[in-house]
Image (cartoon, rainbow, N blue to C red):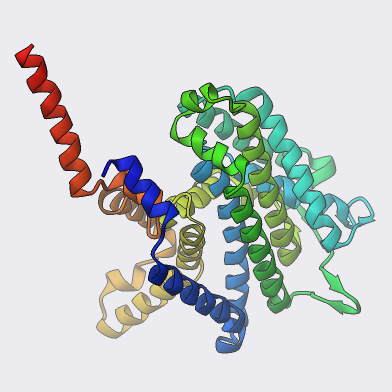
Length: 376
């Protein structure tokens, strides 16, 4: 069986038992996510889970750009900043405008999508490294603008006293629990939207461009417009995440939107598995919890062990300061041993790991060509 046929068979005709197992696993994950605040009532853990959910939203948006359309975006945090500052401008005492949180979710998404179109329209004719450099520049410019526009953004101090969400007479305040459930709802909604988009003609056009842009253009796909849709939709999800994140913190500052944030989100997509929604969610949760909880807990354990064993090295070790070293090491190991990610899509797994039958047929075809050439 040829490789394209094997890919088609794996993606179009999944086994019934495997599909049943996937649905059971999905149901268990949903139930566990809903019951998590009951199973772990620690407020700091719930708050960390809510923040992790925001980064899941960001990773899902970037997955459209990178995983589906095959475009390398190194400035994705810029749209996160735009959504956050939109909420800071329109839902705080800064300008005396107090739009509701629920109204700001679609507004910030639309604003971020417009900036995605503004960035993409003149640049999406570029490819590969050139596009990556342009998006990197955009990602560096936006936080600097917010940092230096002191009159409007309060410079490095940011905009504080943001309006918390309100439902009837209930004010979210600083309670992380309602934010957690809002984030869960948004993740579920966005996953449904992405699945619909993936199976639509637009989604198939994204994947065609990812596989071969020249061939896609030859088949009549408007590559610029299609890539522009990917940028705009991915940016809108980032803007929505910015609203939730800034409202939960009650503060928005330019320090949260540097290049390291874009690299962090891209690492989530790569680690989890580009193009696969469950993989991206898993990668986002693992990396965020590694940063916010696991490394902090490892530092505490190391200090306790150092005090008990009187080993000075352990008492001075700080895993939080080593997070970028650990991220880099994890990515290097992933690229060496599992380049498709933790939960790759079936197509990407087939592309990166050819079956023995495919490899044998390819070698046989090459051998036949070479022998025919010699005989001629």
